[in-house]
Image (cartoon, rainbow, N blue to C red; front, side, top):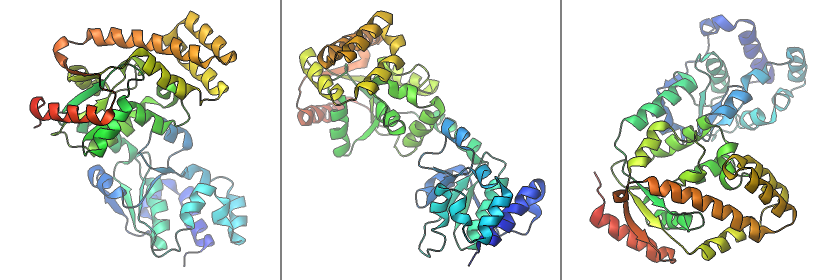
Length: 365
C-alpha cells in the first residue's frame, strides 16, 4: 500500500527538481490524443490539475479541479502531517475525495490534464498508479482540447434548425418534448444555466466566461450527429454578444427557423410565475447585469418595481422590452428562412406538427 510519506517523498522530489522530472524512474503512464481522451473519459474521473483561477476561465466539461500548486504549499507542514498519517486530509478536501478512493479496488480510472507541459500530470499520475489506479494523461493538455473543438466545429456541415419565438412562448417545453421523442436538441440558454445555475434571466450569459461556454457548447456538439436535424433554442436578443463562437453564430444566421407564437398575456403569465419565485436581491442584481440592454430609464423603473414588490409590472416591463429586441432581430432575418409558424399551445401537438413538417420539408444528409 502506498503510504503518506512515500507520497510526500515523490512529490517533494518533483518540487526540488522540476525540470528533470522525466528523468526520474516513474511508472509508465498512458497518454491519449484528444479524440481518444474525450471518448474514454466518460468512463472515469476527469481531473484538471491547473490553478483554480485558470480553471474558472475555462476547462473540460465535467472535470474536477485539483490545483496541484496548492499541494506544494508549506512543505514543512506537509512533512509534519505526513508523519502523523494525516497528509491526505491536510492537502485539501477535493483532492482528499479522490485520494481516499485509492484504496478501493473497484475505483474508476483517472483521466488527467494540465496546462500542456505535462510535468505535473506525469508526477501526479505516477502517484495514483503506484496504488493501482489506471491513469491516462491528455497529450498536449488543455490547449489540445481547445484546438480540437475549434477544428471540430469547422469540419462538418451542421443541420441546425432554430426553434424561435419571443420570450415566454414555450420554446423550452417544445425542446423537451422533441428530446423525449428521440430528436437532437441544443438549448443554448440551458447550457449557460448549467454553468451558472444561480443566474437569472439573460444574466446567465454574464455569469460564465466565453471560453467556458464555448467548451460546453462544442463538447455538446461532439455528441450530436451533424447529418441529422439539430433543433436549436436560440434567443438571440438575450445572448451576450461574445457568448457564441463566430463560426457557430454564422451557422445560426443562415439556418431555417420554426417560429412559435403565443398571446402576450399568456406569455406574461408564464413570466410572472417564474419571477415571483425569485428572491428580491436576485432580481435586483440581475437587472443591474442587463442594464445596458434595458437602458437607464427602464433599469431605474425595474429596480423601483422590485423595491415595491410589484412583480406583475416588472414582468410586463421586461417582457415588452425583450419583445422589442426580438421583433427587431426577427425582422432582420430573410423571410424565406422562416419555414413554419405554429400557434398551438399544446406542446405535444406542436411537436408532432414540427416533426411531420421536418420529414416532408427539411433536409437530412
